[in-house]
Length: 347
Image 1 (cartoon, one colour):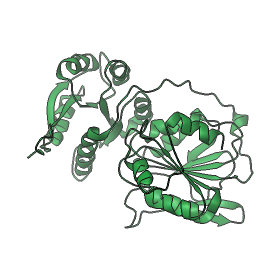
Image 2 (cartoon, rainbow, N blue to C red):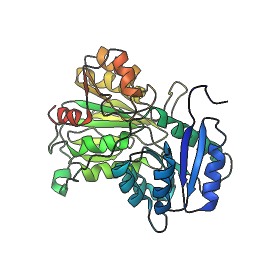
Image 3 (cartoon, rainbow, N blue to C red):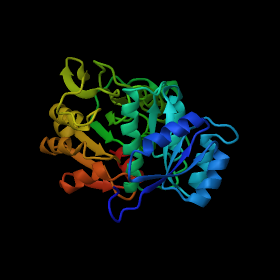
């Protein structure tokens, strides 16, 4: 039974496939705290239903007739921002990140075939992300002009970084990271490593998108990558990123998750490692995200003499991860995202 006094989340399903609408409805109907208030076959129908049904959450397919998911998102977010969970196939990686920039809260990668065990994993993820809408701050996305970088600006410096900046993020993180990376200056003297909770098939595409929007040379991390000034590495999905020392400098080590890794990629594991290798040159940045991944690692950064900065509640889509660091009294600064970007740019 639903929690007494807690109204059910009203969900609108938007998908041009009747089979998909039925499958998503069957999954969501298993939760007593979710109420399906409508199903729409395209963006035009969905906009009409949003006005009359006032849903708390929308599940959205991006490829639809009449009005596609992108146009729907632009209009929805300019009128009445609502939590949107994109339901995407693995072949639509670029589209997913475009949707997140337009204001979607998160995405669920649907399997090619609706069979167990894949379906069980999708069912759990979809229910969890829809329920997350109870604790998120939804607003229209900020308009950003993409920066243009030349190949010369992307050349690796060959210089050792002054500081190692380790960024942890989960729900709401892709858009926040795009904001941060787009504001960093050319010839940045530091190196960055990122642990963003994301499926393995999407991290390379996300790294490429960051690379196009930033003067830094950004890539999905590979075993043995050397950290240089002006470089950034995104941990691959379903792996954990740590640092090691070598004759050439600090290098990346990738490993499979271990039982103590509560989240994957693990921000805690990354921060523990950065603290151990970089010491007082370690800078931890904890952005929006559900849970408390990064709080334990932040303590290691502080104990090593490094700096911990978090995104403030004013801009964090989900205040779970940064809030956990603040409650532990480990953050030296708590800044809204635009100010945090400026602080990193001037570090």
